[in-house]
Length: 304
View (cartoon, rainbow, N blue to C red):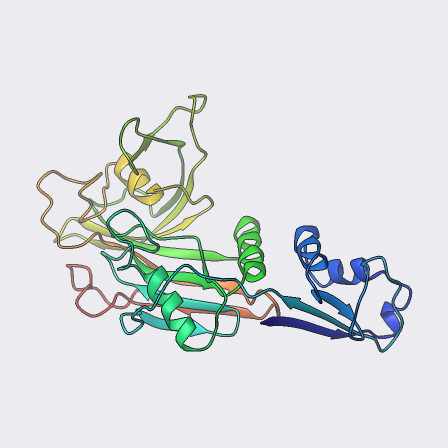
């Protein structure tokens, strides 16, 4: 069971328990969930109201309910490379061709199930949650939160731009500008699952989509460009559609790329991550290259 402990100081004298918890970073919703649990919130071992006035030297304890998972006995040895792990988060390097979470046709062979099995084998019984996702054919960094509160805090970091992923894409053609911003709305293609297209600014169903890009290298012989992309928004297939809309589809993209595409993989990789540890606030910077055997089809030096 996850716990949060704190001993009040002279600075906390006169504060309500609710105020202390809000200052500690807990949301109103998180506090509300805990106060209805038996021993969810206690002061000096006794359950109390969040309106309680605090004194110096009191121990405040939050105990988070163990969450059940629907997964049965699973194999965890297929878990992708672990890039970082602590008691609150698990960061993996996902291979291309592997789904992030259970979906039609991939109920067990996905890293969500594998990560859950891994955590259970470590004695961590709470349900884990992906924070963001990658398309099946996109490789790279995927984050899993080991509790509801950790997931909520990481989602807030995404909204504020604190949690930030950097992608590498190999695209056809020589990019005209060395850097720029693609600010073009997207919308789902009617009648086609998980397929997006460009939308007009005022068009019904249009979703704001913003992609910042920077050219890292022009490969003149191959007539390709290696491009770094950072997203302000996280729309389905955003980078893929935006690059294709500029006449530079991603190599290996059977959805939005060239006809007769023969590349064995989609050349899009989430290779860099910046975030703060959801409870301590510690800065965490992660990099992850393409896994062996899944490198882009052009010999390129390390991305970072």
